[in-house]
Length: 181
Image 1: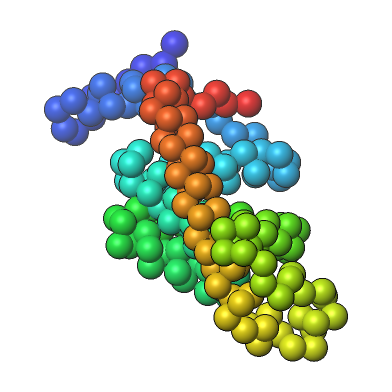
Image 2: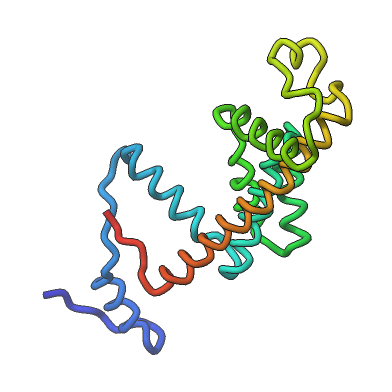
């Protein structure tokens, strides 16, 4: 049995007892596994500042801007839009990752097809060889108008649906803390 000496200020004994019986598990020393690092990163991302609404607005801003083919500017635009909407900046930056090297072509092809369906046929979706030779923005207003209209509509739909689902998830899980491994 441990004995506690009288400490110099009132209530200090209670603080010392609480520290000794802390329920926080100690981490074992040594390197952590990749799985535990990824889990900690996800938990850190989900616990960002702001209300649930601010977090959902930040994610929505990022997803919306990520649907546009403005390579190199999507993160800046997402954070700017999140500022206007008073959303979480970090989640806005993460939301722009909806477009990445794996999803670029299918996402922008779908956006173009949606714009073509609404505006009528244009010059057609350019081949990769045409894009390499001319550049995507040199194809003219026919192409640009269709991809921007499709990107706007897909961005609105995706950002609304995913941010709403994220907000609902946050609301449901606010009473259920994440379990530790």
